[in-house]
Length: 305
Ligand code: 13P
Ligand code: SF4
Image 1 (cartoon, rainbow, N blue to C red):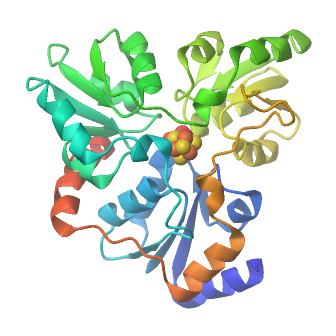
Image 2: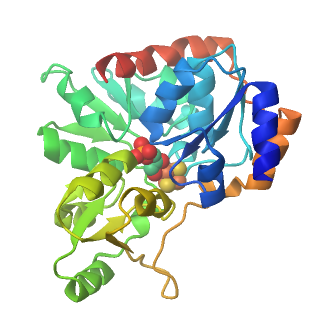
């Protein structure tokens, strides 16, 4: 399957972009593996004719908005995201109307329609920088992730109105079980994604995006790390930091398995990736009027990154 994908990729001048949460085989066949900001930048810059986006829908949609003349295909069109799917435009319009003086910063994990209602887009790797670039007296709405929002309020000292959304994967980490693991490995350092709940972020030694977590673990002197993010990141971590001991943070629900997987990310399989490259479908289409508006806050973010 990997050989067939490589041959097709060359024949069609395609590029495969994969997020760290994709299954190992997909990461191995990808031309580039990165966090959501790096993937958006790669998508914007590529001169390939076809972008195979191995990630979730909002990421592929952002790629299409940034590079509209390219064909963008997603192995499984149902690969959603609890944050994006939990913030519907009709609800967000009403929410926003309650705060007419506020400007809107949205996490990139939202639909293109929500981006049209935003003043700035951000990712977990640049959110603090984006918020700090906005004059302090400007009241802000932050959507759709309340955990990242609460973390940013703490980090920047700004009061923001938060949309009440969350990531099903990162909300599942258990502090109680994390403490049990920590007692077994008292020298371990804890690295967490900011979509995790406040009590997890409070005990973390490092909080950052998926790429940020990889760089931290690679460069820190400690040997053992408890990793509070989706389990797919462990593949890249094992490659980049082979001598470190990596322990996935335990989740609240599951007693048989310590790892947390994003069911949306895992909808993409190597076979679906092959088929979408072969058939050039399902492809992402974005209404032109929506794309024209949504690109404005995305470009504001890219200019600040
Ligand atoms: P990153 O920006 O760190 O890649 O995170 C994206 C995401 O969906 C995390 O759940
Ligand atoms: Fe969305 Fe959470 Fe999956 Fe990331 S891990 S894509 S935020 S559901």
